[in-house]
Image (tube, rainbow, N blue to C red):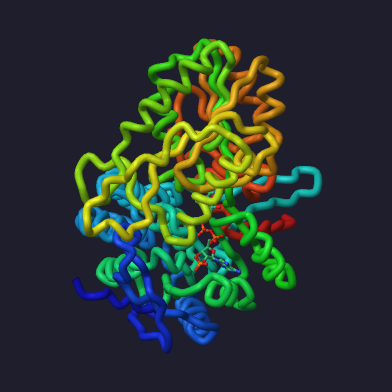
Length: 481
Ligand code: NDP
């Protein structure tokens, strides 16, 4: 198959770049696309296009903006299978997962935000004592810089694009250089849907060059970033001199707390999914399981038995649960944590069995679901984000003890609690340091509810409405009668 050449998308046109990077298909280890290695020059052109498009787009009535976005959603939906296959090759995830979760969710993001903003109201207040009247109006901020990671390429990119443009902003976006192909294809849809040139611009390339050039650009007053906690610190420093508006959705080290009285059957099925889906490369995946002593052995035995059954292999094949990890480097990093487990004398209960891969996948970045026990709470396995299919299971005795242990990390993104006692569910959920706690479930997302991390997992918990607010300036006008 020939190599795809990705181009930047600036002012409604696909443009060449001076230099290109290799993009690897994680399931074969082969170069399948060439990605622009964009520089400040490309970012400058994109910001300039977005600035020029801003007066027209921000003055377009929200109803018209909404119509264009609904058209984008329809067109994307009509090409669902094509996008699912592309995202799978970009990222390594099974095609079925992209087909049933990532691409439908990207469609939903455009539809949800397109309609959500239609029902927004301004505020007003009368001050009788001084005979004055206050009201607010809302305005877009300007050119928004959007920086997104590789793990859910379309899902997370569109979760930024949709609120930014419905609010009337124009955009310069930089997806992860490892998963740029789907975003590039999406740009074709923007033109067909009638999105005016310059409203959305894509600049592809590395974070420290293209990404940082967006963050440092004085013409970009607002930046929305999803990625690692370490990168976020660099972003904050780069943005600080400009007092930019920042939204940061960062990493996690999400605990699952399983009580003796949990519905074990449902808990195992969901916890296997929450630990290993998308190769464990979802910021919300559970990666440390605290299991109450009475069911600890039963849980571990059953969990390992189910983990061993999961099929890892060619993302295109039916029946495959896990595809390939994103890159050779990331696979080495994740495996490095298994080496740490070995050095620390922990028990590796599964994960090192033969992969039995088809010939074309022999050089892909695959790894089996890995379950580790006999780990200390202070181990790096229990405190650092691994972002792969590795789960540690440890026993606990009391409720107070497990809350303290689960909270003893710098992250606070998500948690799960499993119990059939409703009081336990509420008490524990309220005390866990996590922006979202799922009780007897996982990844049940209502876009109307706030989402985001506590502690070093991010700033600001946003509902869909809050995301539109983030991309909006609200001004108060006070009229003395
Ligand atoms: P990174 O932080 O490495 O990268 C995220 C994005 O930032 C990429 O587009 C990257 O570009 C870019 N970037 C890197 N350095 C800079 C810089 N100096 N200035 C500007 N941009 C930069 O994260 P990953 O892509 O590895 O994604 C995984 C991380 O994302 C995990 O920690 C995960 O938990 C987190 N995440 C959080 C979510 C949440 O909602 N809280 C959701 C999904 C993921 P490039 O790739 O080209 O380097």
